[in-house]
Length: 473
Image 1 (cartoon, rainbow, N blue to C red):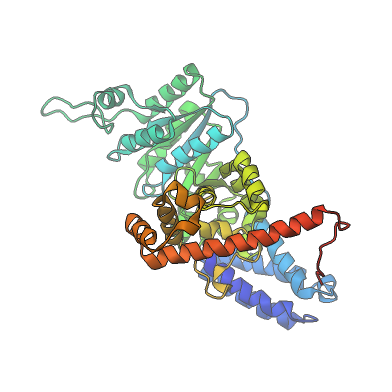
Image 2 (image 1 turned 135 degrees about the vertical axis):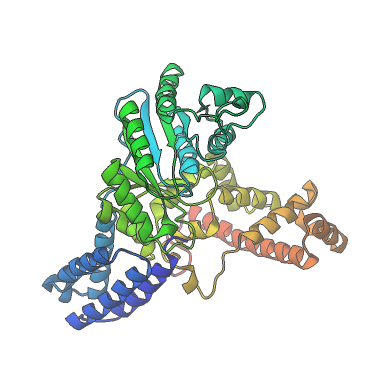
């Protein structure tokens, strides 16, 4: 989960503050010393940490906080506000204007996830009703154009390739380079500037309202790369130049961002691999160091795992407050409303079957990795504090395999599943009889709980003045 180690450290620090009736300046200094260490360990820029803690201290030792009935909570509120401000304050959206097509130029070093991020961004914009075209402008890295072509095919989003490369791909070859040159002659890669310009024209002619240009990268910042990117920028005049940086690169990512901003000029950042075990300091420091906002974050390997960056929501996740708005957005995007209404009726009438359970598993898994989903629920941000709770996606896969190995009759009437049937289900799903027993037992307990809820709901409907039929306090 994002910033898990940082979240755990801050949670421990603020737990001590919550129990205090009044705070002294010494209490605040001690807490901020822990906050400072936690941020530095998370690889946040030293100067950013120093300025951040100074601002928090200035607000936290004010009279309004010291005399507050809940001084600990007030300090946490200040930290939340300052974390939000540190990461940009408000979410920064793409500024595409009225240009048709609007051009988005993706830049970055090799290995940062630039080509994949270009495809993810195209998928993201299509969900918003846009009609994107991907433009392959990296003729140097082996198979870069082929990678973009394959990603576009998976998403059913068109990709513009230089004519010679497109012809090779259409003939069943691999879209990697210019056509084979005569013996003794070096093949010349397609000109990226020309490709970008032609790609924009192709987008205009094809009715696309966005052209996403995937440019070449290098293993490090150099003059040749910067000069080429500057020429492409001058040729297509993009509405947005997005720098893709690897969150796992730490402080190096910020140095790269500064170089690109000074020499090419960027409008925002796309932070990749934020779902990894990266310490995340680059994401917290990027706005302060570069003056440019993070606009998107990559949160997984799937092509829909790109999210708009919301500083306030990220600050809430870091402080273990959850992120209910993002959870609702994910649910609305992933869940079928009609199926959800049908499921609600079944739940209230206690007619829930293993077939329904399987459908729910599929719906939940559409929302993304389970630890990320749980991390958005207030109080579950730091899963380690839940008494050792482990989120194991493999258990969901096993449950799905076991239900898929059942007959339709067994799913709808699981009480008929005897010993021999359990052995057959275990063999068919690659699990053990004990696994099948555990699944059926958990399902039976769930049904009992649903019956109790169904009885409660009926009691409320009969008119008990809108009150629960049992005391709540």
